[in-house]
Length: 358
Image (tube, rainbow, N blue to C red; front, side, top):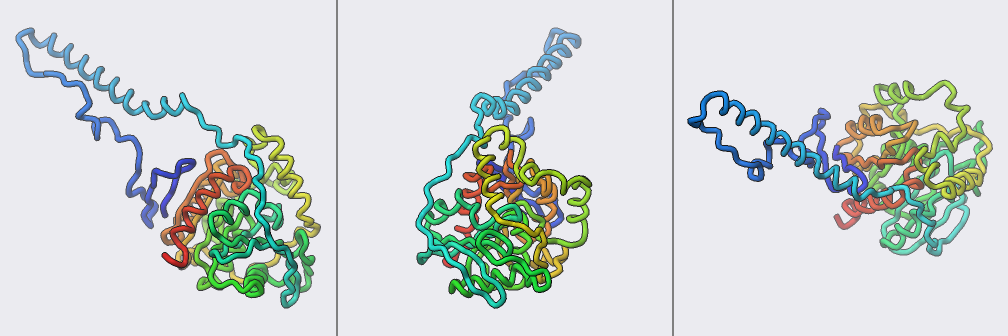
């Protein structure tokens, strides 16, 4: 696993399969890398006697300690003088033209939009709290980067057929039928929250079709082991009574961006979800299976996510060979919306390394 701290994503922390840090870009500890800059003290015996020599030693130690504290704290002081607000309101950018349609599949109909073109496809999978409408921050950015961008609503969501509980199908096979309907070959999948379980399920069923897999705010649909146990421990009994907008949008964003929060709620209400029933996954995904995942994988987590905090994201990413992890410093469960510039930058940098030509 490679952890890429946000927002700069420049200091890379490599973690071995055992979870131990192998290298870390950070200020060196005192005595490593700063020796050339330290003041020089001549501590050789002098004629003034033992008591004065001891005083000199104490002064020298105090001066060296002060220097180390100053050197170690220099970066933090500089940052404090130039604060950056990662949640500064960002207006929704103008959307690029996209075709809308309804795909008739074997036993359902799915609403979708597609920017078309000859670029590598990116398919966006929405969380349980949204629909294909939520990707306003991603659609134009990914399209202008040269990609063909596609999203859709799952059964029961905006524009798509409702879920029949007697014949629910499964969402990853719906995805497969949709990409066949659209004539896609290999593609990148980018998913948030509940969409991440479906993306993971698809990666196990059809790994040959994926160029890369990005999952934000989700534990990859894992059904047993330490990962779901950790998730269960942090979920209060009143979880389902908490309004969805409080569960899924972080407190910093709600405080800083009331208009953005209002629009998030509006899009959630437009999702059209009436029946909270979820389609089953095709695979029963275990922690051991994560170790067999062959698709290049990026994990994204919000530091204020109530459901999938960074601790669980790290547990998950550590199980996946060569997975990369990005943590958004102030985001809740909806990183794609709360910190879209960080989200987009992380996704584009990752998929650029795993395109058809790489």
